[in-house]
Length: 214
Image (cartoon, rainbow, N blue to C red; front, side, top):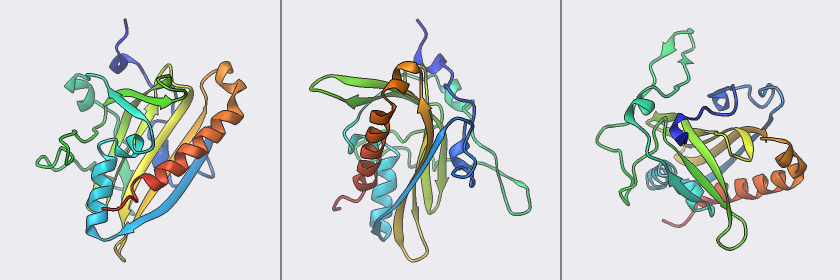
């Protein structure tokens, strides 16, 4: 039996949610989405929001169940990290998490590239749609943090979704969600209008998930 960490993602444009022109030039055949919302103000809100997000809190607070698979360390070490460039065209070394801050307040480990698992979308009662995903990159900057996951075989969609929290110079805190996706096969294409409604529904939940009172 193939383990989840052995599966390849189901799309080619890995890291594409970091492209500045994704909305104008998405991967061929994929529908791009970008949503942004102000979720609060100040350092306390920023710390709460990014630490919740980096422990899958945005998904859990939106009604998903998150089940992580055991992933060998060598898989995480070799995970894809998109190359970024400065204004002079020089490559920027990808930042790494502070080794002293690797867990959320409840002890949940922060996400890291290569983490693999299932987002279980509730349907009726105990029934749900198991959607396997893998973390493909992590953003760890002083005032900007986030991650993106890509879809694995068995997910109803093919594509990538990114979640980024940033604190601006005026101390306001913002959540940005960027994604590109398409139905994974003919079965899911048949339900495409419903899938788009669900995507919009859960995106709205995401945008509210980290704005809860502190």
